[in-house]
Amino acid sequence: MNNWKKALGIMAVLLMVTVLAACGGSGEEAESDQSATDSEETKKELTIGQINWAENIAVTNMWKVILEDKGYEVKLNNLNMGATMKALESGDLDASLEIWLPVQDANYLEEYQDKVNFSDATWFDNAKVGLVVPTYVEDVNSIEDLNEHKEKFNSEIVGFDPGAGTMEVTEKMIKDYGLDYELLSSSEPAMIAEIGKAVENEEPIVAPLWSPHWVFSEYDLKFLEDPQKTFGGVEKIHHATRHGFDEDYSDVSQWLKNWKMTDQQIGELINYVENSEEPIDGAKKWVEENKELIGEWVK
Image (cartoon, rainbow, N blue to C red; front, side, top):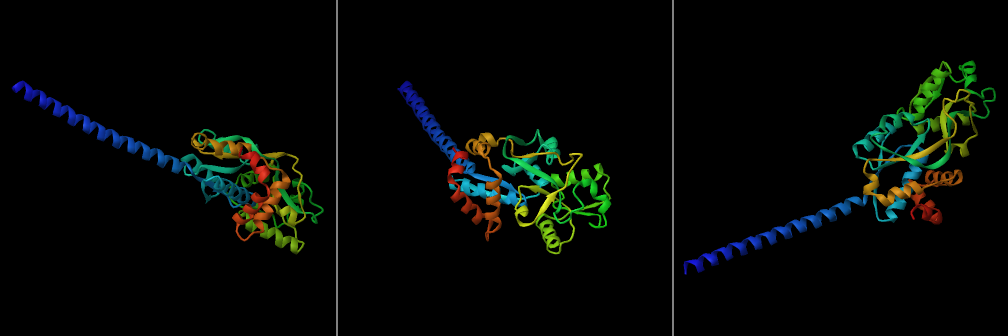
């Protein structure tokens, strides 16, 4: 009898352990399923850095439209170039779509090459950077001519964002050529406004600019010759992503590598965005009209 009671007791204990284990397993499994769901939901959210440059606003809004059509939720975070690199390093940003190499953003490549993924792939292969003046300034055709005509320009080069790689290259150019000029910082819109005002009054102005840019279709400007090649030659535009991006967003990573644009395509996109009430509206119009091209990127 005592042996029988003991056996029943052991069976009851084993049954209780089995039930508890089953309950615990179900909880862990549910937790695991919930974590996977949360991960999938998080994976659909992307944050892309946006810099207040015409072509950057255009392409970030274009990709926002493309990715949201694919089911992603895309946030555009407005930052300057220096803050963009820091945010990519920390993981606060997923991607930045505009890195100019081999010259303009070489300092960022050198500083962050082990902390940020810089793409080998390029989306624009015929970019140019340098100093520009209006074409009616006929006696200034080279950077070497600037000192001789410094009174004409009030010894000032009208610049834009102080953190931009091109601004740092322009500072170097002033030293390389021994120019008696001051580089003024502002923003791209303020710089373009100053160029527009000068052209309207047929006054001289010199500023660092780049192509592709809509301003060349608006005003007659010319790049000054750069005999020392401080600004480099042809620049190519890359993108950059945070570490782990390729694993978290393998499809998007491949789409960005497939992305290629011509002068005409980027020029039209910038024009649509610049002439819309909201940048996203211009981007939507361009995306709608270029579905075949975009289909080649998002295979």
